[in-house]
Image (cartoon, rainbow, N blue to C red; front, side, top):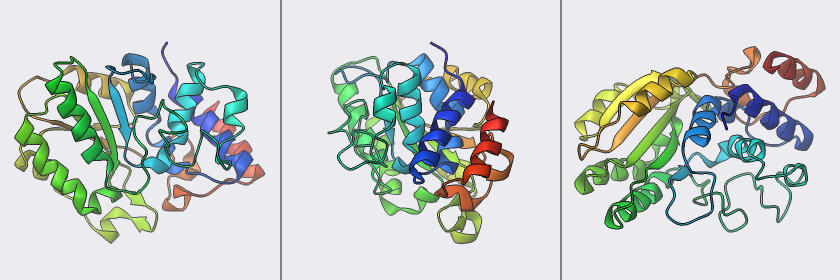
Length: 258
């Protein structure tokens, strides 16, 4: 089943509006990537031996819930429990409550280390599967990320694909004003990663990048140049990191997405 990025955005918008809580900006910037990954890989599974997706920037989990809903795995009743106490649809991924999440994340900086462990286990078990990890550009300010960047090449984890959602903003403002990252691609290559930089809001570019990956003993990094709140003209702003829309904003955004 081929998922539509804007359809996923509509589900996210509805969830956050109805609960007046959640993260729209960073969910929207990932919509094309999530539509592609859930369409092309066996990550919508709670089974052993499948490809894995670790959402290290766990606050963007609404976009994963949207994908699982489109695939018929989550129901309307499930979606109505978004961010409720003891709900399987927490504000960050909770593997214990929802096994379709492959890791419990939310404390930033930890997801890549978890993904590294999954990728290494896949190698040891000779599984022909990939482990995907999504981190935010603001999240790279966490030191543990760089420890994982250093360790992955040691184990020749060419089955590990790290996506950096470079939407240029984080909770407190613009990344370039808080802690600049450039030249990020050069840094990744100096750590002995294969690294590509693409338009992360283009499914065609994502598809081309994925098809170009090689089994050469190097972990993979794909820098996604995205827009915060992509898909809605007035949401490309750090203010929409964790802002819930009012009725007028909700209707205007939904109109654009449709």
